[in-house]
Image 1 (cartoon, each protein chain N blue to C red):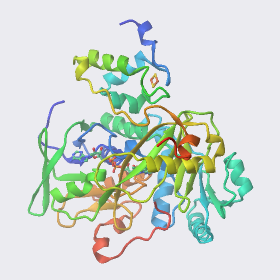
Image 2: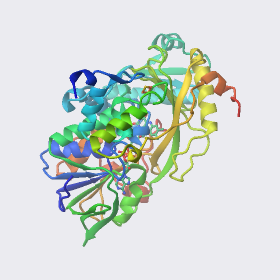
Image 3: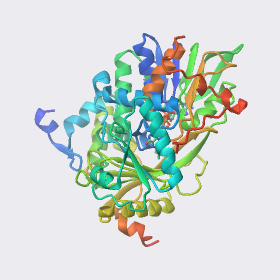
Length: 383
Length: 93
Ligand SMILES: Cc1cc2nc3c(=O)[nH]c(=O)nc-3n(C[C@H](O)[C@H](O)[C@H](O)COP(=O)(O)OP(=O)(O)OC[C@H]3O[C@@H](n4cnc5c(N)ncnc54)[C@H](O)[C@@H]3O)c2cc1C
Ligand code: FES
């Protein structure tokens, strides 16, 4: 592919965030956009994630982000011209502690006030939603039928293919090694393939976003933790129709449309060494959760386990803003365990911000200056 | 090559034909991992034992590189599928 030395916008990172931002910018009319990816598209956290999508959140902003994303996913196939593997059979939240159930109910009231039809379900009803569920020790459940999951690869590729049709250039196997600034403004990037001058650079480098920010002279407190996940062989549909999720139970489990079941949990300790290793501890703990919660999975075989990075901020909420000290440098990172589901909406809001428009959901709260001010966003429903 | 060869199933686990593989290589998905992500080839119960070699050869043919230079993609544990109940009991550490 030919190399052009200038661009209107350079996006660093070819994960779901970078691809969504590039697509949304192109859709708003920006002509010369280049996405730079050090590996192949979707080789970072996005291609390693659980790909759950939910509107069951505990703060107004996250509920609005969640609902907007659910609505976008519902029409993404049509908009992007490619099936994203959406499976909308709800999130069943399982509370094992009284205080946890009270919190779920509090969040539910907020959700209901914002147009999210979450409801409390009994154990009997939970077992209708998820036949074979064994959770007699649970205190209560909430359910929102529009939540679900999608295919992270197809979603990212759909954004990329739609962006390409609108003229966006993608360079794979191209690593950004420096970010150039002049007098408090962004000037461009240096890469392993050459330089590109650009007045706007977007940091969507996922687990590595803090390094890109540092190259630009922008200090963000983000760090990256390893989280593990596994997948089983495909089995008949209906073994786990909804996404099962519990904060205190420490798990999420879902069955993909092709039959494989995906599960993740967080054993103690998340190495911060940027190695995508896998552990026996995780495999054993997750398998125990599977057979306890869904006894009929006993004979189902695990076919793969892997890990990926959560890019984390002090309040586990994202950084979505323009840098104060380097104009033209925008950031979309720090999504912890929910950067896949938010990508359709965060990409659109950041594109609006880059073009000097008012994002239709306010994102001022997501500026990294909140960390210095000690103004953390307290979200009870985050992992 | 003929239409007929395009109908041959290369990945039996995921029922993916040679034609589909060629179509996505032509769109720029020219590494094994990229084809895996978009078509699920190599993600089936056999974990690519049945299709990896044929796909690598096809990538080599289409990109004009020797087969030996084509990256075989990422291998993920466990090497053999293991039952959840066995793993839950601690397996054979
Ligand atoms: C096990 C696990 C389960 C998860 N489950 C969910 C879930 O259920 N729902 C959900 O919403 N989220 C989930 N997440 C979180 C989600 O994966 C991330 O928040 C999301 O994928 C972030 O997208 P991204 O595009 O910012 O990052 P990435 O997909 O990591 O993309 C960033 C890209 O930048 C590239 N890059 C880095 N440095 C450079 C450089 N110097 N030059 C060029 N390119 C560079 C990387 O190679 C990478 O491809 C999960 C994560 C993990 C690990
Ligand atoms: S034949 Fe392709 S994964 Fe089994």
